[in-house]
Image 1 (tube, rainbow, N blue to C red):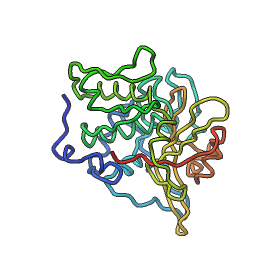
Image 2 (cartoon, one colour):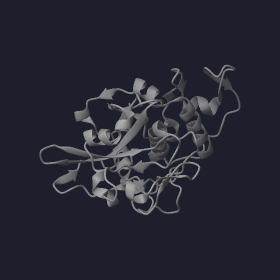
Image 3 (cartoon, one colour):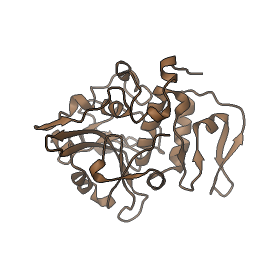
Length: 286
C-alpha cells in the first residue's frame, strides 16, 4: 500500500483548485505522469510571456501552479500517437508534455481527468476525484477500491460488484483512470462541469468544442498558463490530446514560432475551428 506524509494527508480535494501543495515538492511530484528519466525543463522555462505581458499571479502551492510547472520533453521531440505514428513535427507544436500514455483509451477529454487525478494523488490519494459516465452513472475511486466495476450484458450500464479490496497503489490508479476514460468524455464533462464566461477563462479551465464538423464527440483543451498586459488583455497556453490517443502537446498557431503558443481564446478557437464553437468550463472542487 502506498502512503503519503501527514502533510499530504491533511489536504482535501476542496483545496485542489485553490491551493495546498508545498512548492519545494512540486518538481518531484510528476513521476506518475512522466515517461522520461528527466524532463527537459518545463512550461515556465520554455514559454516566456510576450513583451508587455506578465504571467498572472498564482498561489505558489496551487493546482494552477502545478499545471504551470508541467514538465516537457526536449524541444526536438515530435508528438506521436499511442501506436508510435508521427502526428506533429517539433516545429508544429510548442512542446510535448513529459507524459506516459496509459493506452488507446487516453484521448482528448481524458487529459484533464488525468491531470486532476494526478494532482489529487500528490495531495492525498484518498481524494482522487469521481466522474460521471455519459449515461450519468458516477464512477468513484473509493468504489473502485472496494470491488469491481463492469458493464451489464448489454454493455449499456455500469455495474459495481463487491469483491476483494484493491490496494490503493499506482497500478490501481492507472486501472481506475482507464475505466473512467472509457465511459466519460467531452459530452459528459460539458454536461457536468459549470460553464464560465470567456472573459473569466483561467488556468485549470477547459475549452470544450462539443460538436465536431462531421462525426465525433467533440474536443477538449486545458488552459495550463496565462499572462496579462497592463490593460488586462490575457493570453493563454493550451494543451490538448486527441483521438486516437497521442502525446499531449502545447499548441501553437505558427510553425516554427514558439511565441505563437500564447493565444487569445479567439485565436485558439480559430486554430481548432474544425471542431466547431467552443465553450469554457471549470472543473468543480469535489
